[in-house]
Image 1 (cartoon, helix red, strand yellow):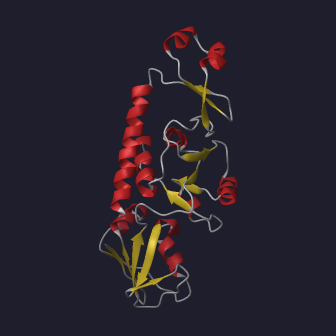
Image 2 (tube, helix red, strand yellow; image 1 turned 180 degrees about the horizontal axis):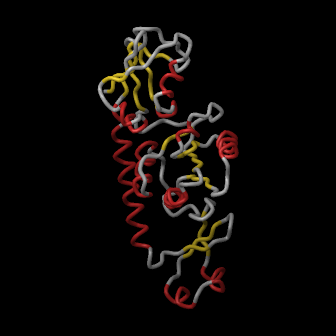
Image 3 (spheres, one colour; image 1 turned 90 degrees about the horizontal axis):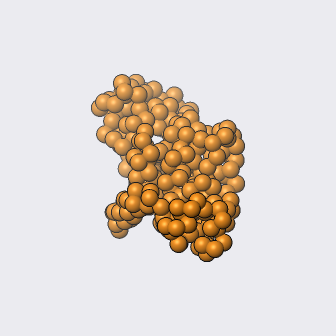
Amino acid sequence: MLGLVGEQGLCLLVERGLWVFLAPRHRRDEVRVTCDGTSSLGHVVESVGVPLPEVGRLVVDGRAVSPSYRPAAGDVVRVLAVRRPQPVPSHRFLLDVHLGTLARRLRLVGVDAAYDNDLDDDTLIAWANAERRVLLTRDRGLLRRRSLWLGAHVRGSRPEEQFLDVLTRFAPPLAPWTRCTACNGALAPVGKDEVERSLRPGTRRSYDAFARCLACGRVYWRGAHGPHLEAIVAEAESAVAVSAAGSR
């Protein structure tokens, strides 16, 4: 735990899983923070770098409090990370402009992952709020926007790390091979005779099972890349199973 202590202030005990949000100089046992008597606890927590959507519970002297609680000098506050898997009203997500590869991986395993690579922050928040989607982002400032109904910081710099982070955090129900990786639309089986005119000769000769996106019309089949995608699906199913089992 990290202690944040201030003159005429309070002590924040920040769970280690949240240290990623703290400045390197604060990642030690004690750091001094002043309590002004008017700021909310939520403001104090975010002032040291931790976005509130990443906080699972705030506990003052053994009792849970809300972010609106106004801390008093001498309070001892435990800042606990969101527990995994995190319950959410719906496993529907919106990804910010830097997470396109993650969006495609989530769609591969059947997770509803909306994405557009040309949206500003205000539009992202409006979309997430209107459709009650969890906004996934690596932008900490975006998570601190009070107008956002629900968001989550994606850990990891590589797509495979980000993929596992989202799966273990939310343990969403999976339905592999049911979504278009290009547009997030639903896939439906389609007869070869309906799509063969759009196929290359080698594909027509080698494959017989196809699916088509009901939204954009893109056609899918298990091609040479199939084993690689199947490995991604198997890894996702294992990660979700382990995460879900940990909550029982």
